[in-house]
View 1 (cartoon, helix red, strand yellow):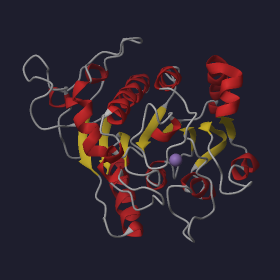
View 2 (tube, helix red, strand yellow; view 1 turned 90 degrees about the vertical axis):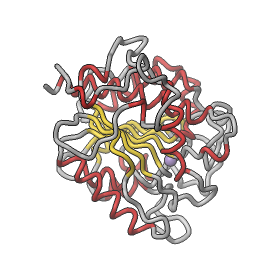
View 3 (cartoon, helix red, strand yellow; view 1 turned 90 degrees about the horizontal axis):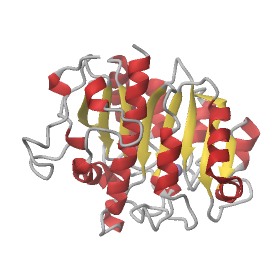
View 4 (cartoon, helix red, strand yellow; view 1 turned 30 degrees about the horizontal axis):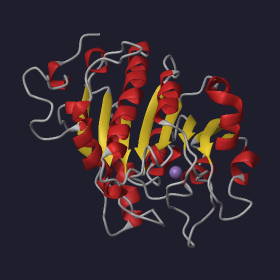
Length: 318
Ligand SMILES: [Mn+2]
């Protein structure tokens, strides 16, 4: 597929990677348009976080860190910017003082993205954001989900509210946006509010791989379970950065010790090549808790892993 030069990554040969205004992976900033295959965007929203806020600065932090990303995937050889049209679509509108208004604005933005035939990779924002994204892209075509997280995100409510960063997956299931038999959660751990935190997912048929189980089965077997679960469903990837051990991703609102290492996430994401990846978010990156910047660097690299397998999907879809 020949791609349009308006969507090429800005060349490091002519503009040093540390120069100029930051965009995701030095892609060019464009408004929503039909020619774009994959849109990279921020959702700078964190009114759904009930412990430590700061994920509203995730998009700015990841844009800055993603300057270092080059053109070619080291293992698969995929060159995402050569095989499809990728652009930075800027940030979704939000209202920093109103959660429900923000949810509506985010859904509206992703409906425009979806209507233009663009597959989104969103950088949050707290982990409320997959709900409005899924409402926009999965209403007519429910999806399977690969969900990396320390937490199940299937609570019914938190502090008396139904829409927040601990409930997105439950709401999405209630609204018919998922294929529950094709939903797999990886990395669950940490102390719980009650015995029932993970029960909802089990009851509705999600596959859960807790950190204890992951360690017991090993990475290869976990990948097998993930693929068995995803079946033939279109896949949405929801990656909560707190699925990683806080040693590797300290910049997050609700850190839990004993988590995944970045290498495991890379290998799992690479294994998705050949699947139909219809959308993704990477959420809960809060740069303010990480003076080293490694959380944003990790987020940028995981975004590139997702971009490569998604670009491969775009080409396969013709
Ligand atoms: Mn989460």
